[in-house]
Length: 80
Picture 1: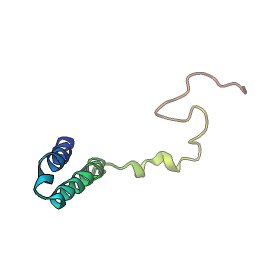
Picture 2: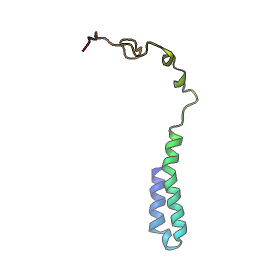
Picture 3: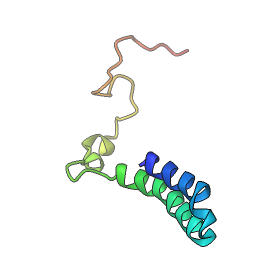
Picture 4: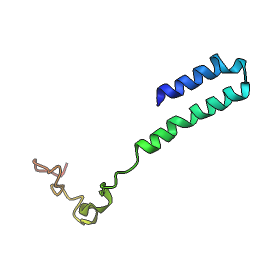
């Protein structure tokens, strides 16, 4: 995608502008829209992704020391 953007930009101002400045500007606008659109589509959530259904979000002891099931505390914590 980035190659397409760079190609549009280089072709617009290196070649196309000699024939049509409007077309060159249009090519640059298209090149400007591609990276954000690619980022949006690439970061789309998978249909199987269920991060919002994680039961730990409803756990009242979530912040208590040693309660995190993914990263348990193995050292005792003192008051300091």
